[in-house]
Length: 526
Image (cartoon, rainbow, N blue to C red; front, side):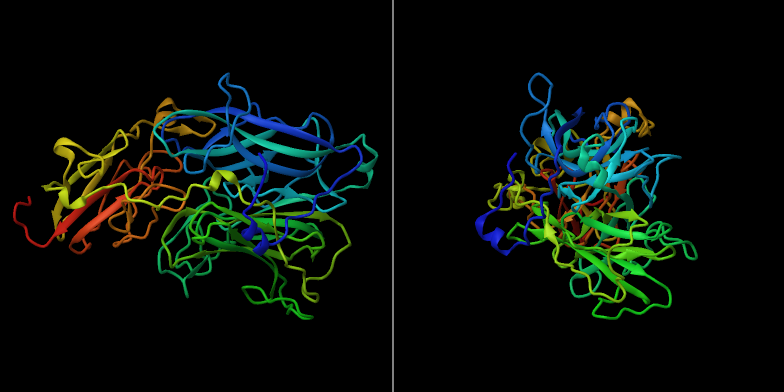
């Protein structure tokens, strides 16, 4: 589809990155799939059998990812799904190619990640003279998580367009190979996520892991997950960040013990460090940093920091914490290095050009924001019903769902000091298997959350609404067995919640809404 942005937004946005062309360059179109996404799907899966790639030796110099519906005959490709209907939570491409050997993370003995995308759909573009080497014999694997926000099944493809310079083209002789370095604030985790609670951090911003008291996976005395020690001297040629809604920027620093920045270089986040780049989320959404309607900034074409063996690269991710809580968010940067390349500058003594450029304009699939009109829900018509249990089934919270009828059309009510337990009957209690061999139960399992939203939480669903901004600040996590769920089918509210009426929604299926009440009197409660 054509990439476009609103006229006013374009004027205020950084310029799009350069387009590089070579004699003999080929424009290749690939599509992995089709993938059947079951109703409400939100599963991590691996495709290691049929991830298409160039069938000859050469260099990838550009990659643009997307997600598309399958055509009625099951072939590729149809339209791009609206993000509020189906979206690519993440796609990570892995390779066993040795010519472009990657670092920073690995799967097994030989596979390493070299590209990643989420709904920010960052476009990879290498500067002139650099490319990622691909061999015809390389095997690609895809770690993907396609999120179906609806109760209807669908078939989709993950498609990616690649600009490729064959090794037989004369231009290939003048391309320097680059190697990916996977930088991740939760490195070496299959599902590398963290939470940002509302009002955490400082001045409405929370930086992970810097501001986390006990960051998940970080062990005192062990190497931090967000750092990578450079073992090949060379020059870094490009990078861009990956964030989720609420994200503001990813920061890449370089630590060199005993060295102090000079010559206008920007000091980094920790002692003896310098900032290499800050990849900002440019929000096209006029409501600000609360949706997928954004584009990440990538380094300019002249960005060339030199690195030495023993230098330590460090990534941190900053989110807005004044608007809402953000759960299961990420902070990732793929940094590309040309080994033993002597070009570039010492980042500790030279100020780098950090004027990042968005890699694409506004995307049409991000146009439906939600939060514009009332769904007509009148919570004052819901009578109280005293119960300690809510069953989540068929995409409803029973009792208490906004759309409930009959006996379930009531407000689950408990007294202060008691707990209300939610049980997810849409998720299977059977073994999930593993991503390489998921069980039938896992493939059919539907995860749900119970997440506080601002009362009455009764406006139309979109990519900007609802938000996790309700009183109590509670969130159950994804109820179910297997990754990325909590490993539990039930969850209970805190006994410390004060009296009041609480509205909530499912982060995975945000059209699911419900209500419960806590009272001070024990009249009628059991």
